[in-house]
Length: 603
Image (tube, rainbow, N blue to C red; front, top):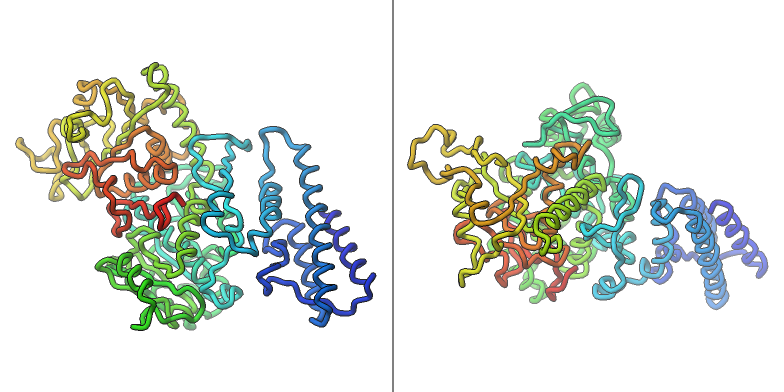
């Protein structure tokens, strides 16, 4: 590829000299119809750097050339570029094994093939039609798995927010955040919002270091670790390199941010404790809180973004009535926080995790985009770029396959189908959702009496109480074991799962598969993510109301196109997920708006 690009450079020079041009028109990304044909892209591979250097050299010349000659040269050069690079990549791919994939090569070719879509914006429908199935790499090999829901959408990797007036400003404008203090899926929800806002605002996102996250404190040692530890952070769950590969996404570590801005006095002139760049935990949160220019409080609010730079009229009475109607429907009883000068010009925006500052909402119901194209893009962006790392997806794939094999053996007539439940007990603060197995069986019936999960089915149960003893169940801060019968609501009695087997279900728990060697070597803190993937592929799923773990499973099922086959086993909430309403807010459930567009079709 290097030699091909160098040859390309010589060819361009030859073309210019042959017509004795002294000056050439600037065909850089300032011209949306060309955009350097999608080849100029910040990246780490050699051909990107060489191409950037070549184009930059040409662009230094002035803008005085006959338009017809210029167009003729561009047409010929584009043809030569396509032929040279495609031939090089095709030759490379012929030498690769059937199952092995060089990911850098794959992304290079995909970007080249999509050069027209990067500069000429496709409609939402065209993007759906031209999207390719995503790729999953397990142990260095590309596998075809039923768990793949993410897609490769033409042009999406080149999309930059039109709200940002100058994209180079991201070097001087930052977003920092704290991990939520709740469970993992509360943390994830906040991360998704932050990633969307950083991209939409054209800001650099500084990722906090790994911390002690609630219920994710098992000691572990991953491949990249030098020693065992119990902290977990952003990069343990999401692929930072994948996010960085996106043209509009700019990410650095907290250490880099502090070295660049803090120890140099760039944050209000306030130096960090000890003038160190390795702050951690509460010491870090306190410092970021002190030096931030803006610290928005989000309780009861949502963010309203304009459709273009400096268009701050969303808060004006003269705003387009249709936009106002969409905002009213989107916001409900919440108040909008308009993206105006204060937020745009702030050097450093910090998102805290304390009470009224928490981002305990879903990304698609938190940020309102008046441009519906943007709204659709950011739903895809989270689906395709904020998915779990391959190591987690591969663990989920392994567990799904194990359950399928079990189902075929246990229920031969079922073609490998299985059902799934998520049952939250333990220290869950919503005590009325902690039910007995008998109550769950009773609730999982249609009004006509038909069982939603028929007797004889294999049922995978994801729960924090696999032994059926409610060991960590509390009511009014007292363990359920301290109460005498009749016990209060929140202390299910009996605690066992016997009613499931009595009804005829063949129930399975994670521990049984672990004993068989499934997920051997997988970080135990990632078991819950693997279980959510298993539940996302079940024929029918029923979860716990208020649980964000259940909620994310519902969204994953929505990505797969089976969101409608999802229920709650909680009292009086059976059919909530199947009601017509598609948009809402709050943490306690997910909405169809997360995986559908305005017309109701999948994103």
